[in-house]
Length: 229
Length: 241
Image (cartoon, rainbow over all chains, first blue to last red; front, side, top):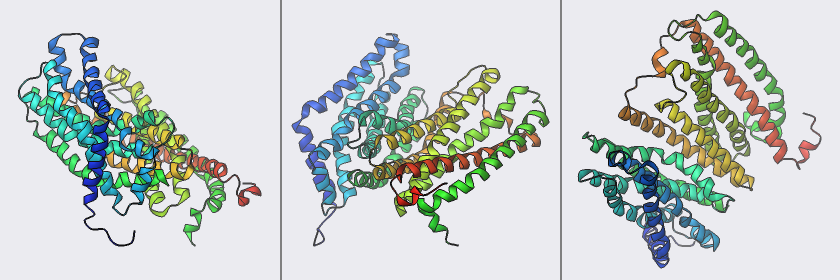
């Protein structure tokens, strides 16, 4: 840690590129999360019946809840492998700023979990009878909302690193904090279905995204330092 | 007088021992006064009848539930910024009391709602956000319990309390807007804002009683936490307190 490193902001791209490369080498896991999403969404018509009016009414909520759960299941991937083989300690010790490394890992997580999920969501919406603008708003709300899920989730994942019963505990910590994202995301779709102006909900998601992008890397870095102390 | 010396568990332990009976005593006196005013002095509500009297415990419990979470987050900031062990112990000591008051607020709210609104539960903005607050308390206690290493558990739960407290207003407003989107506020807990002044006084007295009770219980609990963690320390061996 002698000389000041050049261009510390490169840490974001370096960390993201590394995680993406590792992620694509185990593609099966990425696809499994998507299959899980489709599976969970498919359970709802079986549970509440095939009437298309009811299904259309609950579509946005179902897709959003399934997206929440799918992201939740992928959260351990953020840090646990790096924690197990000691890479995480090296990252914490590296001369690059830890918040930027955390931001890179969050970015990679979103690209591998939230983005594909948002891309296939219109397909699921179609199955539930959504159409046209409703599908667009569903996709946009997921695109804006899922990065926030990755950010909040990263804090939970970092806090519960190596803790026994970690995954249930993480769900307990993270899901209450996800509620505003769920409300604004599903709310935007509900509003477009009711032909009300939905821009407020999308703006709130955007505001959350910006605030999260500024605050969450520092919170994640603090949490990682606590966990590796 | 240097108050900072009480940041050390060894000096706070006897201080807490001498303080908690006072707070407990004040709480008991205030609770008796508040309950007397609430049950015998305050008139029967002409709309709701006798059932409205549950507010004398319901409203203080709801306030304390929110307030204690903020106090915990404040101790969390101190624990992370100054690395003081006692702040983290106070957080841990406050959490069960905060969760208890939040649960009490939900429970008494349900008991009040059945005769008044005709249902134990509606997805009203306040009730929903109180329920989420209870989940935040449970998450805090679960994280604190799950981590073996005390230092790490302290700091991790401090960070969680801070993140949670930033989220509380966001959760509150999101739930509020979600609620107005879905249903008109046909029933609202704010409708009794024009209450008789004796009712208000009874409620404020009960709030103070709950506040003093929280302090007393937190002090007793923090003593237990100190005794547990410092069991091997020399200063504790000869302590009779």
